Amino acid sequence: MSDQQQNLYFIALIPHLELREQMKAFKEEMKEQFDAKHALKSPAHITMQMPFRGSDEFELHLINSLREFASNQNAFKVQLSGFDCFSPRVIFVKVADHEPIVSVHSDFKKIFKEKIELKETVLTQKLHPHMTIATRDLREKAFKKAWSLFNEREFEASFVSKSLFLLKHNGTFWDIYREFHFNS
Image 1 (cartoon, rainbow, N blue to C red):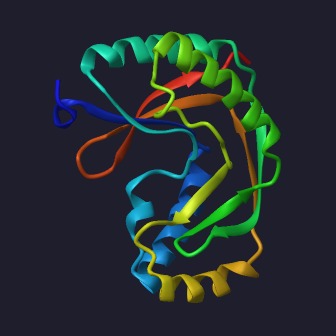
Image 2: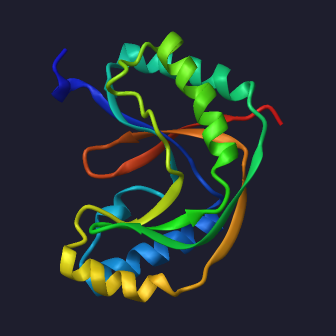
Image 3: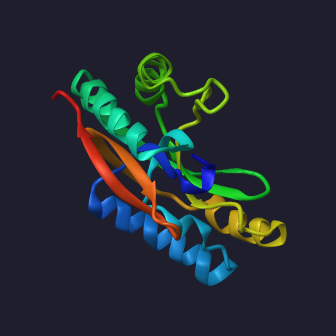
């Protein structure tokens, strides 16, 4: 099967609706003020596995493996605090404590490698948990203005991560496709 016929997925932690709406408002601000709208193509999330492709047959195996993995995880709190950037294109909301997410990701990588048999080159190796509000279409000149605006802005929020989410690309944007609840 060629890549064009395969589905595009990624795996993430997604906050509750109210927090997703707050993140969407930041993304809308980026769109209106800086013409950066790419981040609006996905719901607010913390990426656990970068986009990868798979067939419909692979999807069934993926769903079963994610369900099993999630059932062995415990819920944990994610604290968000302020803004940061990957200059010169990305602005994001910072995750205050990376440890719980990195720990889940470490277990997740083992499962992905062994059970799902995702190639090492596709597997997200190093994680820097964050929630993107502007990304690849934020031009360098606009980035400087946007970053000066968000650099000093305060933002505090938290959510309990109770699930892992599989997102699937529909050709235009990312849909929340499946939710896999953690044990607790």
